[in-house]
Amino acid sequence: MRFIFLFFLLIFKNLDAFEYKNLSTNSGIEFWFVEDKSIPIVSVSFSFKGGSSIDIKDKNGISNLMTSLLDEGTRNLTSKQFKNEMKMNGMKLSFSTQKDKIDGVFQIISDQAKEGFDLFYEALNYPSFNEVDINRVKRQVISSIKIDESDLSTLASNKFNQHFFKDHVFSNNIKGSEESIKNISRTDLVNFHKRSFVKNNLVIGVAGNINVNKIKKYIELVFGELKDNQQNYSIEQFKALSVGQKFFEMKTPQSSVLFGQPGLERNNENFFALRIANYILGGGGFQSRLYKNIREKKGLVYSIYSYLLSYENDGVIVGGFQTRNKSVFETIENVKNEWKKLNKRGITKSELDNAKAYFNGSFTRNFTSTLSIARLLQVVQYYELGADYFIKREKIINSLNLEKVNGIISEYFSNEKLFFMIVGEPEKK
Image 1 (tube, rainbow, N blue to C red):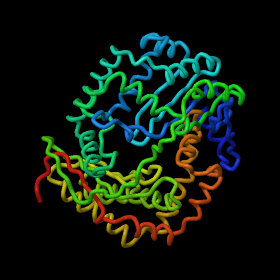
Image 2 (image 1 turned 135 degrees about the horizontal axis):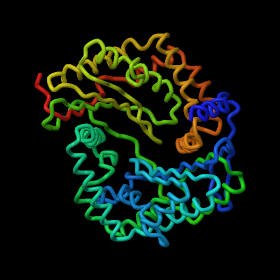
Image 3 (image 1 turned 90 degrees about the vertical axis):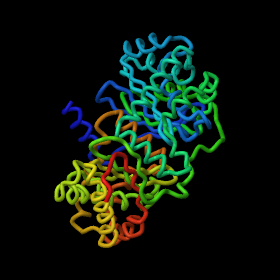
């Protein structure tokens, strides 16, 4: 495994030499492709805009339920038969619902490509949505929702989304509720499947041991029958995010706190400046200011972090920590102070240089397997980062100077915009 990692690393060490092909099938489906013969695997990463953001009113969770059923049998195979065929052919296929899209991953051994892509075609285009399977998966989802309600971290995340995003569709739980899941019929699932999987919302990245002609044929097979839908599934900007604090009581020896503020969309020209600033503040693990000052120096938390959640048209900066109930409000004040210090004083030249070195060096991790390459190709297309992204990325990072990054910090990082969701039994100030 170590040898394979080093092999990919050597191949793609010079990103200027990283080449992909922009291919198109007979029906006009475009996708990016890297041919790699080092290992006998073909990987496909794909996504459809929409996800839980287009869930039917009063039937929240339908996207998640639908994607959970796509490997539960087709028009020709029962659930058990389909899963056995996958196993026999060395195939992996998964679908997952996100707030703004449906993601999918397909992998197959090169020698079994025909059999694998045939199964992929059946699952995507002709899922059976058998009533017995629907009821079984519904029970599984409802059980999962109930478990989430007793899990501190998951409950805090759901409560944070509910209050932070206010009336935006992102406030909804991807899994829905027990009531909304029970409201979903087979007809709903069939119609939602047709509505979700449409060509004009599709993005594909492919990498692996297969030639151009074959992969064009297989991509056409799998996706060629999908219809177009002119409806725009892009997500609205966040018009008004919450500020301040919200509290949800849960009997537990420690509280979970999530916090957030407005950020930037992924293809914004200032994205990397904001990303570097966040890396220094809370995204750099043991090296981040939040960790050093709140964990190491004061011992208030076991871990603390922040990261960017950037979408197609908007983004947020979010973070979190867990702490003893008596330390909740002290820790919150420390987070606000770190935010305020960053805004007023900015970062140092040394911090900037270290962050640049990290982002330049860590990018090679995207080239450690055919799947990671396929995912990267898909992500760059999805966020419209440009055909020259692999060449310009390092140049963008290296061009950032202290004045630029600190200017972005003073513009975007504000402790007055922070929202804190507290779940637990914090002791009052």
